[in-house]
Structures are given as C-alpha cells and as structure tokens.
Image 1 (spheres, rainbow, N blue to C red):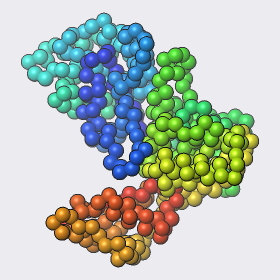
Image 2 (tube, rainbow, N blue to C red):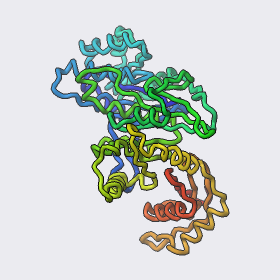
Image 3 (cartoon, one colour):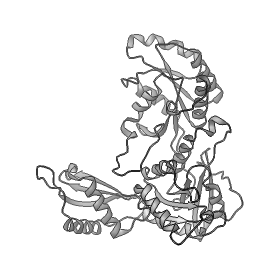
Image 4 (cartoon, rainbow, N blue to C red):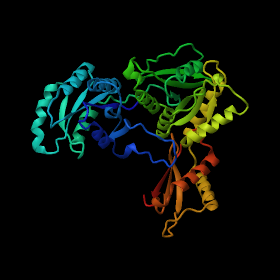
Length: 438
C-alpha cells in the first residue's frame, strides 16, 4: 500500500506554503552533488511519529489567466481528488470569508476527512477566534502558527488518525513489483500491453491497488510480476490539462509500491525537463531503475543514433548512471523481449547482500589504492570496518573515526569500487558513515 496523502488547501495568502515548509522541514532539499536531480516544490514526503505520508501544497500550483476564485476552486478540487485527508487552512485574524465558505462547500461534497488549521494565531489570547470556524461544518479546528511552528503537532495527530491502515498489497514476497513512470503520452499503457501480450490492461481487484493506478499481475517463465501503470488524469478540461504537476503524485505513489521502476522516455520526442523530475523521485526513493526508451521504431536512425541517445541520457540523468537502458517499441514489440531479463537482473541486484568479510576486503583494497582524505588540520579519515545493514536498496555502514571526514567525492569513489566488485546494476546503493563508538 502506498503512503497516504495529506493535501493543504485554502484561499490564497492564508499561509499554506509556510505550513507546508514547516511540516516537511529539510526534506525539500536533495543532498546530491550532481546536476539533474530536481524536485517539484509542491510535493514532498513527511513523517509524524510512526506515520509516513505525502504532502501536497496547493499554494505551489500556478494556474494562470483565470479569475482568482476559479483558480482557488480548481486547486482545491485537484488536491481533494488525490488526498486521503485534507488540511483546510484559514486565517484566524481575518475570520471567515466568502472564499473560505466556498472551499468548505467543496470539502463537504468530497466526503474526505478534514482538519481545519486556523493559522496566524501566534498569541494564545487570540484563540477565542477559533470557535467561529466550527460553523464551516467540515472538521475539527486547531490553532496554529505556521511562521512559528506552533500547534502543528496537535494538527498532525488529528490528521494521522484518519490515515488508512497499511494492509499490504496482497502479493507474495517474491513477486517483482514494477511501476511505469513518465510524463503523459510516452506510451506507458502501450508498454504494459506489449509486455503482457494482451490488447488491454487488466484492472486488478487485489487489496492495496491504489485508486490512481492500475495493477496487473502476471507470470512469465515461472516468475510472478505485477505491473503498476500510473493512470492518466481522470477529468478533462483546461485546468487539469494545464496542471501536469499532479501527474507526479501518481508516479510517487506507484514508486512507493515498487521494487523496480521503469522510467519511460519518448524516443521520438527526446528528453525534456519533466522526464528528469519524475525519474529523480525513483532515485530518491531508493528503487531499482531501468530507463526504457519507447517508440524507437519511429526514430530515424543511422549506425550512431542509439549511441548518441544513450550519451544524451547519461548526460541528462547523471544521478542514474547505474541504470541500464533498454531501447524498444511497444507498438511493434521490437526488442520487447529484452525488458524482463533486465528487470530480473536489477531486482536481484536490489536485494543482493554481501558478506562482511568480502566487503571489507574490497574497502581495504580501495583505501590501499587511494588513501582516505584528510581535513585542513591533517586529520585523516580512518575506516575501521564496513558492513551491509539492509537491502532494497543495498545500504552499507562504514564505522570510522570521524564521519565528517568522509567527503562526498571519496564516498563516490568507494561506491564505484563496490559496484566494480559486486555489480549492483540498476540499483542505487547507500553508504553511511558512523563513528566507531556508535
């Protein structure tokens, strides 16, 4: 089951984005010393106590050339469609406005659980302003201050009480779950049908299938798979078509449920910025990744075309340098038989566990070839030993004298040596430094 979604809605200038930034803390920033990893500011993962969830800030949606009330309504409707729980933000200093009442009517019709954040109540003496907001009739009311971070704990407690229980997805543990992500019209659904050898996508009734994706279980060569194909927009119209950012959330929810992510590109149209944004989420989530270049039949080719396209991918997706690339055509089924063997390979790498003594031999050899760095005072990093602590993705802990001495460039060097020794095709690997006493 994917993470639940909390959407922040409300009229403009009530502090939605301030509350969003407070709730996600530093999660918005990506610590990655490579170009190309981008994040759409209106989405992030957050956690509260034992709950992990996605959060949407509708204040980050830009819908231009529309009257203000229509923009606000469109943003609220989009968020309501996607959310499990709504956080309705109002300005406690202003009292109830006509725009607040408009949002409240939308929320009443949605039948989604709602918590009301009465923002900008920095002073407890202002809390008597709370009670009028109960008249909106959509949910419990909580005094908060987004700018000072006050009251957000009680708000999150209430929101989390509505999150659905995680009941699993109903598949066996050895089933390979693979999702297809990519911008609209790159041929994701056609690729599903080509892999299945069917003329239509089958909608599964298995528990855990999200409302925004299509699950298709199948068996090939005695191996069980599930393809998770993110669905298109459910509504038509200018607002939905101009708000492609919301397709990212469907990709996020599919990624969360996946072992392997197929990042689908349009070979005919080439790479655009949205491709890099969506693929970046799979990398950050630590999933195994295969880059699939679809519509290869439609590309005018010479003997260097594939090589040039691959070089372009490596340039634009530097953070996915570990991901294999498959060129195919879902329409003609050209090279479609190459895909599942690659999926199997990266799935196995994603779950590969290395013995501690073998891992430490590789680390010792790497340090011998390229000694560990020193700081400006001459203090040298000392790696006492290394161990693998988890799989999916493979995660390694180095016990060292001072974690601050493990510079990104040397961590990258160690990663390259680990990959050279053990493969790990298609999967990110994580290297963490811990002080020996820990």
